[in-house]
Image (cartoon, rainbow over all chains, first blue to last red; front, side, top):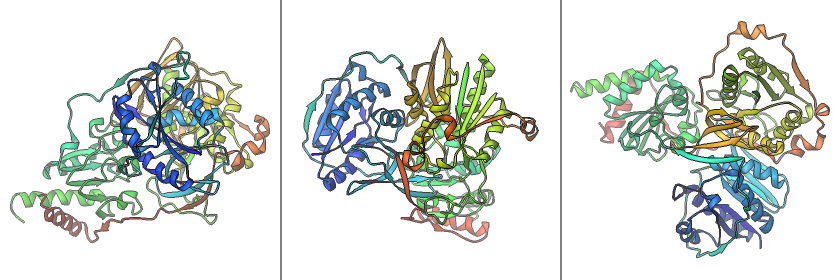
Length: 327
Length: 262
C-alpha cells in the first residue's frame, strides 16, 4: 500500500498548525488513492507530540536524535531521504513555511523527485498529480501537473486548509536515526525573539492598517490620526516594515502578528495571502484601494475603489464631528 | 570576496490588471512594465554593500530574453562588475528547477565565495532556484535571510521564521543565501548612471554554450507544467460603496456605527 507522508512541523515546544492542515488534506488524498496516511516527526524530546499525532494519522514515524533538536535543513534532508528511499511514499507533503523553503527544493534535487511549491490544492487523477497554485501576486491561479515520478514532493501554503478533528488512533513506529555524523556545514545558533515592549496590535478592537498604497512615510500620520480618533491602533503590511516606515511589531501577517479585531480598515493594502492570513478572521473588514482587482476585496465586507487620500481625511472630519456631538 | 547574484526580470503586477492570454497558460504581457524582481533587488544591494566593505567583485546573472538586459544594466549602474545572460528559445516553459540547472552549469566554472539571490520571484513565486542551485553545486544554503555577517569563511545570518521570530544560523562558505525583503534599503540609480554603463559588455550564452541538452530544459526538463491559467473565482466579493468621497465617508461611518463600534 502506498503512503501519503506528511512532515510534522514543530518549533520551541509546539506543533505548528500547518501540520494538521496538511494531515486534514492528506486524509482526503489517502482515502481517494487508497493509501496510508503517515506522519513523520523529527526532533529531540518529542514524546508529547506523538500522542496528539496518533489521532491525525494512521502511522506516526518518530525519529529522535540530539542532532535534530533544532530544525536544520541538512539534517532533515538526510533523515527524510533515508525514509523516502525506504518507504517510497506516493506523496510527500511539507509546509510552504520558513522550514519548507529551506528543505524542500534541495531534498527534491537530491532525490531526483519533482516538487511543486506553495500549493493551495492537490489532487490525484489516475497517475496524474495535479496542483493548484497562485502566480503574479495572487492575481491568477494555475492548474499544473507534475513530471511523472515514483514519488512527488508538494509544499502546502500555510493557513489554506482548515483543520478537521480526527481520531485515527495511529500506530507509532520508532525509526533509528540515520544520522551518523554531525552536521557541520550549517549550524543553528539561537532564536531571535521580537523585541520586548512595543504595541500589542492583536489586543485592539479596531485596527487601521496601511500598505504600499500609502506611498510615503510622511503620509502614515494620516492613517494614525484615523486610528486614534476611532480609538484603534495603527498597523501595517510587510512593505511598510521593509521600508523602515513602521517597526515590525506593527506588522500584520504570516511573518508578523495575527489579529482578530472587531473592525479592520485596510488602507492601500493589496491583500497578498501573507497579509490576509493575519487578518481574515476580523469581524468587519473595510478596504480602501485604488485597484479594483486587488485581492483584498475578496475578503473585505465593504470595499471602496478610490484614492485613500480622498476618503480618509473626510472620515477623520466626520468622526471628529460625531465625537463633538454635531452629527 | 567574489559574489554572484542571480536576478530575474519580471513584470510589475502589484497594482495592475492582469489578464490571461489566448493560450490560457500565460498572462498577457503587453502593456506591462518589467523590472528587477523585488527580492533580487535586495540581494543585489546586499552584494554591493559587502563589496564596498570587503572588496572583491559582484557578478549578476539572469536567464531571460534580450529585454532582461535592462535589469542587468541597472545592476551594473548600481555597482556590479560583470553581467551574464543565458538565453535560448528552447527555454520556454522552464520552471525553477530548470533555471537552477542552467545557473549551476554556468556558475560551476566561475570563481565565487558567495551566491545571493531573492528568496522568491514575484511572478511564479516558486522559491526554488536558490536552494536547488546550492544542491546542484554541492554547497550549503540558507533561505529567507534578513541579516548577514561574514567572518573567517563563515556567514552568520539571521533568517526569518513566522510570527516575528528569527533564527541565527552559521553556514560555511561558499554558500547560497536567499534574501528576504527588508534586509537593507536598495539604492536608487539615476538614468545618467545607467547610460554610462550602456557600452559595458553583457556576456550572452546559449544552451549550446552551457552544455545542457534540449530535454533538460523547457517543459520536458521541468518538475511542473502549467496546464491552465485563470482568474481565481471570487468566493466572496466585498460590497462596494460608491458615490462622492463625501458620500462614501458618510456611508462608512454609518456602517461602523451600526455595528456599535463608535
